[in-house]
Structure formats: C-alpha cells, structure tokens
Image (cartoon, rainbow, N blue to C red; front, side, top):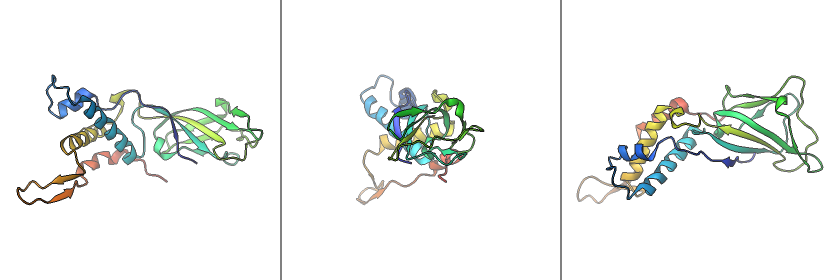
Length: 205
C-alpha cells in the first residue's frame, strides 16, 4: 500500500472562524488577523487528524495498492482514513494496462471494524488479470465523521480551540519564561488537553 492521494478536500472546518475569534476574545470588528487565524484552524484540524489517525470532515482519497489480495480476503483501508463512509470505486489496470473498474455490487464496506475493510461478496473473487506494476489497484474512499462541523465529536472541537489559542498566543517554537530577568526559554510542553482526543484515536494495527 502506498500513501493515500487526496482527491477531494473538506469544504468546511470543524471550527468556524467566528468560533475561533470568540475563543481568542477578539472583537467582532477586528478582522486584521482573520487570515492568520484561518490558517491556525486548518493546522489544528490537520494535527488532530494526524494525532487521531483519522479524518474529521468528509473528504475523498485514493488508496493505491500493488495488487488485489488473495481470493476471499479483504482489502484493508489505510488507517488514517477512518472512519470510512463509503467506497466510491475499486479500479485497477489489467495486464494490458487497460483501466478497469470492479462493479460496486461485488464488494461491501465493513466500516465498523476500524480502520475499515472492503470484502468481496460471497461467490466473487478479486480480479487476477492485474498489471505487475506499482499502484496497479486503487480504492477510492470517502472518509470523515460527516459533512457538517456538528458531526465532529465535541471534545475534538474543544481540543482544536485550545490548539488554535496556543498557536495564536505563542508565535514561536519556544516560550519565554514568565519570570522576569531569567532569560530562559523552554519548548512548549505536551498539554493534558491531548487526553480530549483519546476516545477517538484509531490505533494502527
């Protein structure tokens, strides 16, 4: 399995600009740093996805494989693409490098078992006439909790706000000591707030 390829990015973020500005206690009339804050929102969402090993808002990815599994075996979805909403396409190159598509009636998605699996239906076997080349098979997956910000668990939303606040208040990789005259600096510590994400982590297996 190669790294997934982004096909369709999220159209919204779990935290709105208005919510972030309220959290940061910025007056509604002060829009000077809106672009910066919007970037922090995206960064916080991407870090949450990386830490959780899953996706938040609906997005679509292609997952390349070198070949199909053996007959009767399932295709394991890349763990970073949980929770899987749907399998939009299973495509491959045949031995003559012609693009083919497996009928959606020949497979089913098991989204309950994280990170998710694609099973052939009873009586169907994955194609064997596949080109002997890297990434000959591609599975298109739509992932995420949903298309609305409200679909994302509230503790993830809260964690994002805390990270946005940290990015906004501390604009360097190091924090200066609060004690005047010490001149010491220290790396920002790993906050206990990361525990907010624990119920939703997808562990790679």
